[in-house]
Length: 281
Image (cartoon, rainbow, N blue to C red; front, side, top):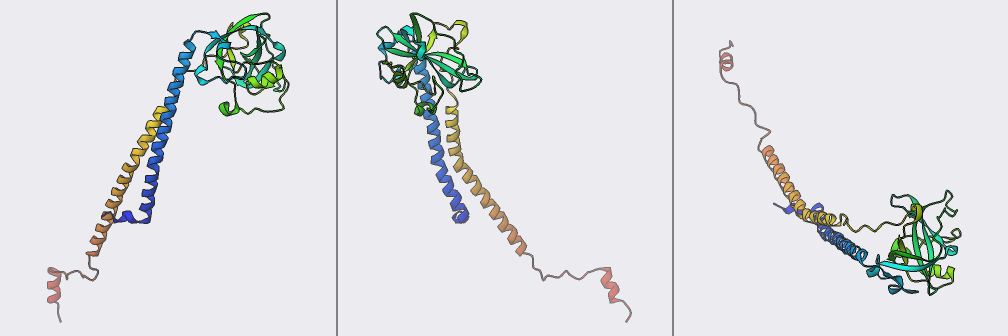
């Protein structure tokens, strides 16, 4: 009844189905793990943003790599801005997706070390090789509050660290690179300034990271698992349909073979035959 399953077409179809099932299951777990990581990151962001601010020197030092556990921790730093070594970070977007730059200004602390402060976003210049218009940093001693972030890398951000850029323009925020340019020790990572607010709203300070949405990863995981469950169901449906089609074709062939082509119709009976029998010789 199901001997057709040994045909080449059905063997290939069966092998494809058997290969698809584990692949779809694995894709489902991949999306599920992405969901778990997103939930864990949202919890980390929420907890760290609620923490009380601490002096930046307690969480980082020159050459220090900021661990993920300290991302977005509120920190404070007191010193004077070194506007002579201020740079802009190219190709950054505002909260409403306008392309511009981030303003990165070194803050010289009382002990002479430096912490990089991302003061916020400004529009790009008309010519991308020109330095954008940047509002001046406050003069004198200032206390800055912000969120601690790690140095940016191409591997983590996907942004290429292009060479040959115009003066005072960079692609990535790197304490190591800025330490070479400034000639001072620079604390690892940088601070996204939240206070004090910029005069006139420029630079536009960076908003808090999103820690409410979890994305559609869980829905995608369920979809992949449903697809995996649907493969054997679909295979069974196709196999039964093939069996019914073959049985119907076999019955039609048998019905056609039951009719004998040599059978002739019987001679007419009744009045016509009687007339023929009584016709004159």
